[in-house]
Image 1 (cartoon, rainbow, N blue to C red):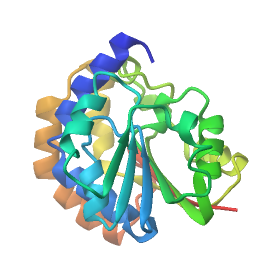
Image 2 (cartoon, rainbow, N blue to C red):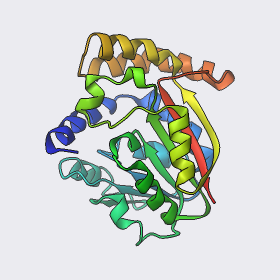
Image 3 (spheres, rainbow, N blue to C red):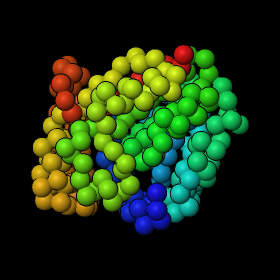
Image 4 (cartoon, one colour):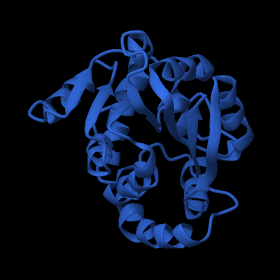
Length: 236
């Protein structure tokens, strides 16, 4: 990812800091698989990190290579003994942490990694036996927009693509489902048709109004399609 994209992605992460309901929803879906020691890959400015702790992670190792985002992450958790932060690529540290983690989480991160299979092989190495791989990514190719490109997304995944790359890295899929069906139309209109490239107001309104309703609905009925994919896999 270029410096320009990294800086832009940082601004986008600032907007996402207001998505409390959305993050809480994702974390609740991951909670049963966290175990005690979790690695968060691409923690950014720490928007999702606290939600992992609230969901049950007792120890969090947060990895963020960006020089402009890492200082925010480090400061946010400098007084939290259960969080260790690393200003490095997770792939560069996986050997050091071989067999260490109960779970490795990629939340809105894997789409930023060009060689996603290689990244997942590093995750596999870092996990304990039967540890979990937890992935949340953007879905549906027709939703790929200028915003995706600008924040450094190499792709939006189909379910087949995601499960194929995960299994090829040595994991067994436990579940893979679409997430946030109601987000498809707003995203398509705002970012594909109208070509908007900012998210702040959109994130706040959607988080306050739509997400609480969608969470209740999708807890009862699994949608056949959605703006995102949520995958849980186990290390073989």
